[in-house]
Image 1 (spheres, rainbow, N blue to C red):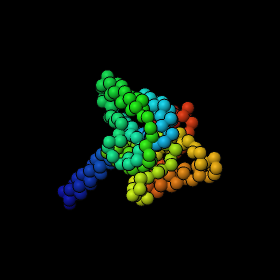
Image 2: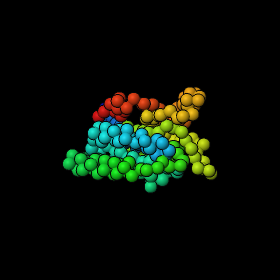
Image 3: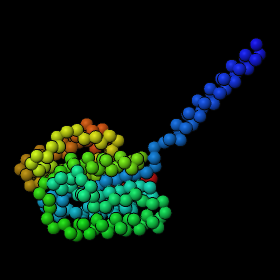
Image 4: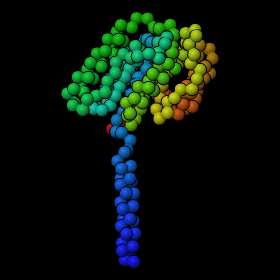
Length: 226
């Protein structure tokens, strides 16, 4: 009888230990303490005149991101769902000196690109850029994922391009930056609000979070500080 009780007690202790092991393992699998940021630059029409502001945003991001964080900057052009539109990308090394070299090279590539932009693209494939951006930030497995859209949010697609479908941005914070007003907005100011509402609905339906930041003096609230 005592042996039977001993066996029950032993099994009970083993069960408790296994349960505690599972719980402790789960506690150790917290959200990764890293960030991934993808900045989309509108290069259509007269919006190219705004690119100097985008360089200021890039400088802020490079100063804020740390080792293990990832960043990419790509242009929005006539067909943006392509690797060729990525201007620069990097995941910063754990060694500070190497990370600083990566940041200097990244800045050089973007500054060089902006200096060479003479004429804007004919069309604006924001949806394609957003899909490409979500793929990038998801592949990094970062804890915090951001897609920043530097654009007036006026999508103008090439004939035959299909973009009227849901976008998967689950768990991604999508931030619209420097959403300038178009000439047509002066005729009917409701058009400006319609563009913002349209993209907000698409992002939220895709499982993402949506924000608009037009005051570029408030970049301190752009991404989470670690």
